[in-house]
Image (cartoon, rainbow, N blue to C red; front, side, top):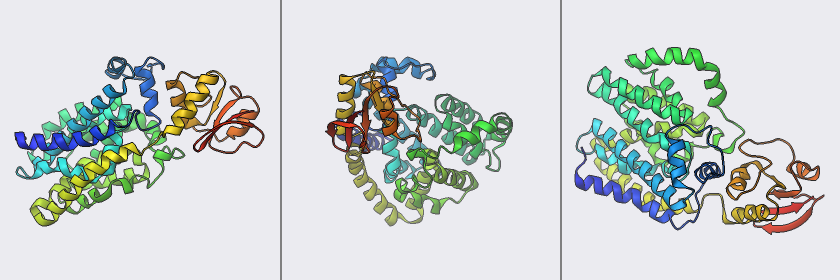
Length: 372
């Protein structure tokens, strides 16, 4: 267990970026507005599972309440990561909960309001029991790991890939028994959804810079339960950055290992991590959507909520503001200018590109509202 002092240190470090985040009146991430719309009753919740279809309506689209929930999810994840570190060093392993801030991807993920964030604590808890099954030589601990992973996969399908990648670890007998039939049944879905290339957040190699100095953790992967799944998860994260977060527990264990192999270097990393905590908070303020995007979407919804042609990534925001988007969630290869000109879904268009055949109505930063 953590001491009160350790708990307090981790609490303050986690709270600080979220306090800075409150200076922003909205939530980062375009997809966040899909779940905000669900919570406010502006979007159907058919595709959202229990417990989210119970919890989200309770938030009622309240931005402050959403950020409180995100903080709680983030802090619970930090505590779990600290306990994972303690599996490998009882005295200093808890500092994994500090060194996690070396990975920018961690705070940027918890700055968004999607189903992923609700699954991460369950994923990290599953990894805790998985690693503990090796540290304590008690393979029966892989059973709670599987149960937690199943719960995480119910909320966020991406957690299902962790089942497959942990199963390649020698000695993961229960994972072998479950993963083999799972792959045989769902192999097509696993292949199809593994690579969402064409969507910016899923582009290969995009996630590596956001791992930052946390990547140094690979230097201390000295046991099979760290090296085998950790390396596999990193490769998988390179191909699809959406899954970089799955490698985080293995990286922070490696980082905490420096307190034993190179204490001076570890203290230097810890000082950098503390600086990164503050930078992380301001980083949340600089992520899209930007103010001009809110202004543009709010304007077109006010002018004609049913007459909107929008670029696809603004679709969730259109719903949040009370409009009906022409495109939502999925990219189209068609020209938005042509879609607007030829009357798909109406004639008030929100575009980042020039539309020479359309009449400019109003300019908002990089967005122009056209009427065609």
